[in-house]
Length: 316
Ligand SMILES: NC(=O)c1ccc[n+]([C@@H]2O[C@H](COP(=O)([O-])OP(=O)(O)OC[C@H]3O[C@@H](n4cnc5c(N)ncnc54)[C@H](OP(=O)(O)O)[C@@H]3O)[C@@H](O)[C@H]2O)c1
Image 1 (cartoon, rainbow, N blue to C red):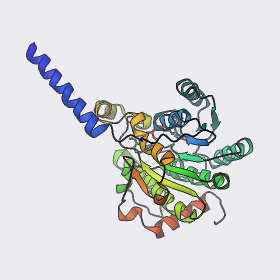
Image 2: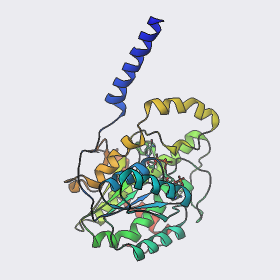
Image 3: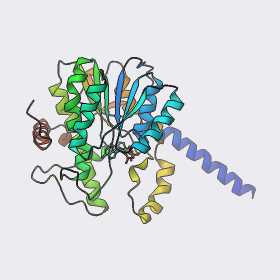
Image 4: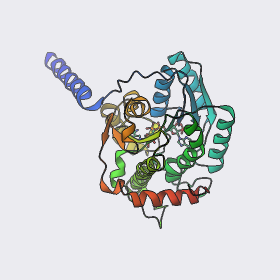
């Protein structure tokens, strides 16, 4: 009995050591106040977006939760107001899987909110076989194209409120991402193709932030792409039952909490003196070098032009 208790205590101690040294990750130490600033966080009703929005609210910002589901978003508004003591937290409807909804959100926001200082393009999906309302690959449509259009429609307001920032949630999965401009809807059946499809969309996030920084030079708007870490959120909600049985215990033990995973997004939104890194990719609250295919400016430019066409935008 004593031996079992001792073994259990050793296992817990080893886990705590592993957790604090290798899993928890770096915390954003900036105490920047956001009083008088307005922040949009997309997909802020759960996971990383909700924790990021909570942090922005605690810093005193007016926070817009840009979410697709009214009920889930209103419950998040309630929680965030209660935890932060900040009542300037509101919901606005946004479905990134519909370009019409993105345009309606932007119109509504620009009419009702005079300021925008920080845009956090956080919403994302891990996998789907469906198409967006406009007939695009769902993962690419939500993770990249919807945010591409949203950002373009809000740029003038960000310019008026500069210095301002844009944070784009990407992922280390970009490393296996490939872009074939002749096939923006690659097959995505099964776990491997599904992950490749997700990785392709996350590569697009990094290339978008890179090209956006080029376009924004001299405007006092900066942008950053982020890998949050491996985080225990609802992003795994679409796993099949057997996959959940296999992965959920691993995810629960070895992935970060959403509050820890949100630290690099928060860092890129508020940390002083990172403007010189505009367009770069951050992980663990540090700028990181990406693989060559994610810093190919010709591909980034082409992706921009194709995205403009698909979103029915004129050239910049
Ligand atoms: N978790 C990780 O380990 C990890 C790792 C690398 C990168 N990331 C990235 O981090 C970001 C946040 O993910 P998460 O882990 O926090 O996932 P999550 O818990 O599943 O949250 C995703 C959020 O996006 C929203 N969303 C999905 N489709 C949308 C749409 N069509 N329109 C508007 N909102 C939509 C969801 O809304 P509903 O609740 O209504 O569905 C939810 O609020 C994503 O971009 C993800 O790719 C996550």
